[in-house]
Length: 254
Picture 1 (tube, rainbow, N blue to C red):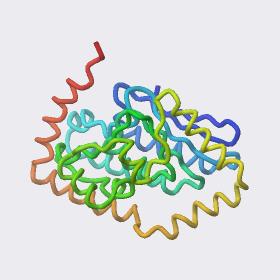
Picture 2: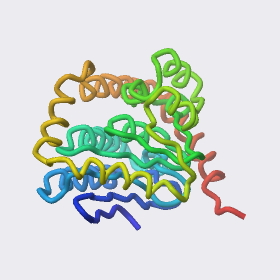
Picture 3: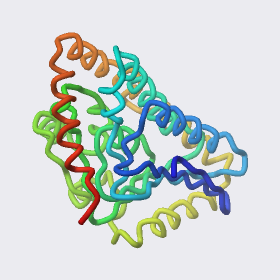
Picture 4: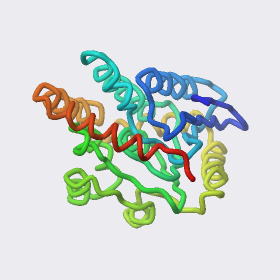
C-alpha cells in the first residue's frame, strides 16, 4: 500500500494504493509529487502511467486528517500538497497518462485534468464535490475535461460526469471495461515510448508552452477562495458534515 513506481520498457507505472478510497493525506500528496517528478527525470523513462488500486482513482484530500488537526496546518499542507502534485503531473518531463477507474473526485480531477492523456474504465465518474465541503479548487483542471458551461454546472451542483460523456468531448481518449484499463493505458504508453525520447520530451515542453491557461496560477487563484471560506467558518462546518457522510461511505462492502 502507498505510492509505488515501477519501470518496464521505458514506461513508469505510478500506482496509488491508499485504502479505503485513495483520499491522500498531506504527506501523500507531496510523496506523489516527488514520485512523478522523479519518474520524469529518469532518462530511461519515456512515459508515465498514473493509476490506482481499490475502489476508485482518487477521492481527493483526507478531510478526516484535516478535521483532526488543530489550526490550519493540515489545510495549508493539503493545499500546498495538491498544488505540488498537480504541477508535477503537468510539468513532468514526459507525457503522463491517467488511467482512471471508479471515482475521480476533487484532487483526482487535478491529476487527470493536468495529465496529457486520460483513459478511463466504463465505470469511471468525474466530479468536484468541493462546494459541499466548503471549499473551491480544481475547476481549472475540470475545464480541461469538460466545456465551460458544463464545468460551471458541475461546480455549482457537485454533479458527476461519466467517462462516456468525457469521451464524447474528446478529453477521454478511450473508455474500456475495468479489467482492460491497465492494458489500454500501457498500449498507448508503448506507442509513445517508440518515438525518439528527445523529440517526445521536447514535444511535452512545447505543448505546455503554448497552453492558453497557466494552470498553476489559475489553480492558486482558486485556492485563495478556499482560505476565505475557512475564515468565515463555513468551510469547517461543511467538512465536519462531510466526515460524517464519509464514515458511512467508507464502510466495507457487505
